[in-house]
Amino acid sequence: MIPQIIVVDDDPIILKRSWSVLTDAGFKVVVLKSGKALLEYMLDHSAPELILMDINMPEISGFEVIKELKNSKGEWRDTPVIILTANEEEDTETQGLSLGAMDFIRKPFASSVLVLRVKHAVELTQLQRNLESMVDEKTRENENLFLHVVECLADAIDAKDNYTKGHSGRVASYAKEIARRYGYDEKQQEKIFMMGLLHDVGKIGVPDEVINKPGRLTDEEFASIKKYPAIGYKILSNIREMPELSAGAKYHHERYGGNGYPNGISGEEIPEVARIIAVADAYDAMTSNRSYRGVLPQEKVRDEIEKGKGTQFDPKFADIMLEMMDDDIEYRMRDFCEQH
Image (cartoon, rainbow, N blue to C red; front, side, top):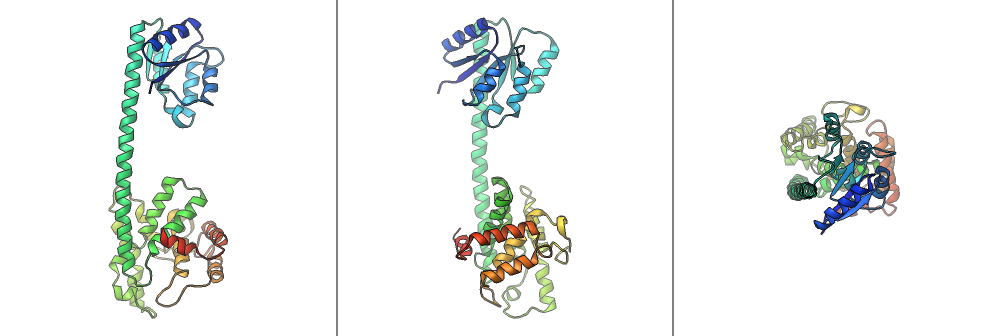
């Protein structure tokens, strides 16, 4: 693919010479006579490999155009700029570099110098993009591997309880959907999905006979259950690459109105991700078979979530869960999440 260069200058002689020299050197060249023309061009065209731009132009200066580029979205924001200038003052160069210009070419320029500078700038930019692409690919590979390990661990946790197969995956899916509807971006949604998968990791430290006991727990057994969020926190806080994973495990049994465990905190003191997971966890507990009862009717689940707003649950996340239930007319959401 032929690299595209945009030259922006109010001097027609500079535009004509730049176009001729760079075209002969094998580049695709677009010439524009003002900074305003470049900003208009941006609206309907993809970004070039490089922009060569004068500073002193009518209506809007080259410096102002660089500011606009840096504040824009997408590929234009990262397009490298080389400033064309006849101004030899040090302040001009300092200001340009501080705004993000890549380099300076003095006018009048020698054709060979222009071509070499442009070639080097394009090669450097392409090298940076290739490296970024390789890093992104490796990051995705590592994230996929990490997610696979997390999913396997979640399955091992769920296997401790005869009645909660798939619980962690369903809670993760519900939590991710609540986060999506609340406005979390995709990366934040993926993080809360992993937090949901691992929210019960502390159950590793609870005896199987306590977890699977069909009848009422003794005070001593319930005390051992209440320890598992702290155990989960201790396990997950050792993952340096994603320390925030531990928040869901530690705080999802706290209550919005207080009186939860392990710390008895309330309201905004509870991390937001844990408040989301708390609603998702409670919904799954009520909509799946447990050792002491079967699946509750949807209206009963709705009533319990409504009743828990402000006491057990953060009202805004409870309301989103209720919206999800309204969309689930056939009461099949738990089946869908079981498959994913």
